[in-house]
Image 1 (cartoon, helix red, strand yellow):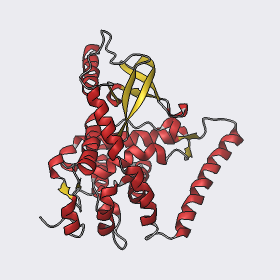
Image 2 (cartoon, rainbow, N blue to C red):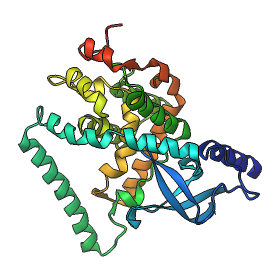
Image 3 (cartoon, one colour):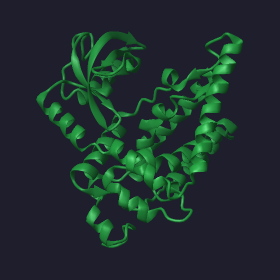
Length: 322
């Protein structure tokens, strides 16, 4: 049984580390070693500070070079890549073409077309008030465990196959000048509904907490898509596809939904909730990712299924013309 676990871990590590051979005890990386780490759709240079065997799996405590130590974290081998010439080329290409953050800036101006400044201010005030309430409860009780921020608790481990999907998605859009054909089928809304349906049949009933988390995912997706989930090349397509009161979750699919999961720790970084609530949310999010992974061939496009962005421009952004 132990042998099987070690083989599985080594196999995952071989894939992630670019063909690295594990040592006799199964670890793929050593303390002090500089390697590359997945961070969203990018690779970042990190240094391994500690290596520990936890629950029969090697974990690596890493420091992102040039980043504040507050970002240091424990990761598994499937997040890491060996520091090789081939992987450095990938890193440079990603850094050069990565357009999510640039899209976020232009996305703010696009967002103002459909949302008033009063709405934006109200949402910011709500966020500040919620954070303040969380801090107040913590101070009054004197117990720091009452409310904990997401950056300390929310750790979303993306399955290796979905990480590859994210990288392929980035490559198609930024390197090959392609975009996801819209509208997608199934849409984000349909995927969430399907998950809820399956969970209800499997468990006999669904808890209110799970239902609220799924509603939250839909809400976060609709609001975050134009602001931080689009690459620059996709912005025109968004402007043409999302008009009037159409919700992005009824047009976009799993490709963009995965990008949201990468951003969740950042989005939740100023939210304070009880530790039990965070744990329940993390469990649901991880289970949902496994659901997407299990249905990957149905929910996600293969690399060859993307269409040229020129087709989008000629077809008014709807992706209907062949």
